[in-house]
Amino acid sequence: MVIFEWIVAVLFGAVLLAALARRLGAPYPAFLALGGAALAFVPGVPDLTLDPELALALFLAPVLLDAGYDTSLRDLKANWRPIGGLALGAVAATTAAVALVTHLLIPGMPIAACIVLGAIVAPPDAVAALSVLRHVTLPHRLTTILRGESLLNDAGSLMIYRLGVAAGAAGSFDPGKVAPAFLLGVVASLVAGPLLARVFVMIAPRFPDAASAIVMQFVAAFGIWLVAERMELSGVLTVVSFAITVARYSPGITAPRTRIVSYAVWETAVFVLNVLAFVLVGLQIGPILDRLAGDEQSRALVLAAAVFATVIVVRLLWVLPANGLRGRARGRDSSTGFKPALAISWAGMRGIVTIATALALPHDFPERDLILFTAFCTVLGTLTVQGLTLKPLLRRLGLEDDDPVGIETGQARAEAYAAALDSLKETGEDGAAEALRAEFAAALAEAESHEQGIAPESLPADAARRRAIAAARDTVLRLRREGRIGDDAYYRLEEEFDWAELNATPRAEA
Image (cartoon, rainbow, N blue to C red; front, top):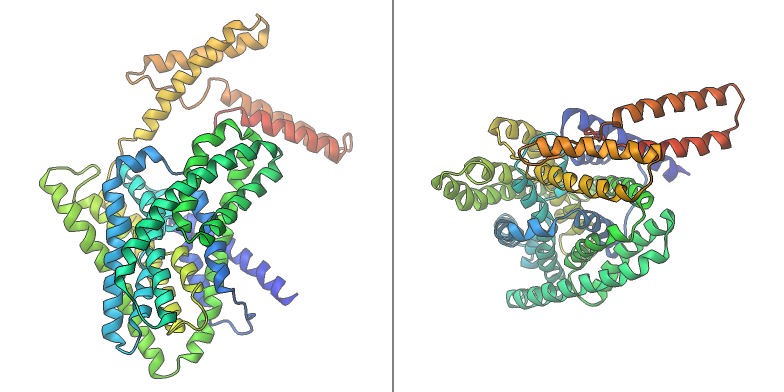
């Protein structure tokens, strides 16, 4: 019962912290990290630990599936050079630099453990960066690069991580095994993911109700990860390629109600997983500090500070010379150049991936406490220092977006309205059909008057529809208060009004 009470209190506190983060325009993982760190000093907290073998599947599989589903394959192909440079080159450089710094500061630490620490802190987290980008305007290309990097950098870091963990258990590390294993895992994973996606697309229509369909999505996330692990593939690339493939085919097989509900469920799941990850690592920091007594605590703090500085400096040195100075020489400043490169450099916050891989270390791994402490301090440092300053920095840089997504959306909306209007030609002359024809015709006329053929974001009757539905809601609510209808009738009408309101174009703020 005590643990249940703690869970309730932690979730409530996380909601408050997330609300504060939204109010300040800061990444909510930064506040979750601060909350997790505070738990380490709260007396009487329960002793909660997680099986290391469960950590990666629990935290990474659903987060990566959710991110992969929202990823544009076309944009990934168009920006493969910068994404590949960050996802592979920056990860390798950061891993090597952190391993070197760790070995210099703690000569007695096994080289495999140094490399594992580097692989753990190497990949930035998209959840943190994108939660900031929602509050500022950033060129679409830069957002695409950050999304793509966060999806693919986990694969390289986890490959190195797994080889380092195996070497730590065996007592030796052979760098010659990294490249062949990495290449084989990449190719096989990129084949297995789409194949499994085709199987899922064939099975999914057999579960039409929303509850079963969403449960199947989670089963797929964890199942694909477990299958990849059993086949010794990259769980990251398998899940991501699976999600991207499913996203291409699911619109035709997923009911609208299921799709709307699943978006809310997955957003909630990712939030809860972030909360759980930071809580679990926060609860372990206290015992770790107790075990690291005297000089060991000082050593841990020095290493944590050095690793934190290393990951920031390496990213700056990797991105700025290769992109910023070259872009300036070519006279670009919209999506390439020094300012965009600085924005990309400073958006390298670490998050749930680093926490999950640190928690996944075997309990008997050399210097596990030191690695876990350093990883958490790096996450906390990047989220607070970079996360809380990223929004002011982006505003200061004044990067402008030509809104290619908005232009494409408007043009596609115009073509969709034209198709809808054509379909109504075959209907009768009743009042409802005539009203629909007039509504789509007005929207299409406005699109045709725009020089780029962009249709308006809302249909002409949307505002009136919302006002009418609001009046209907007030009426049935009054009838329930007066006792003239029961709760069952009220909830049935409420659902009808919800669907009627969903027929209106989504509000811009949504």
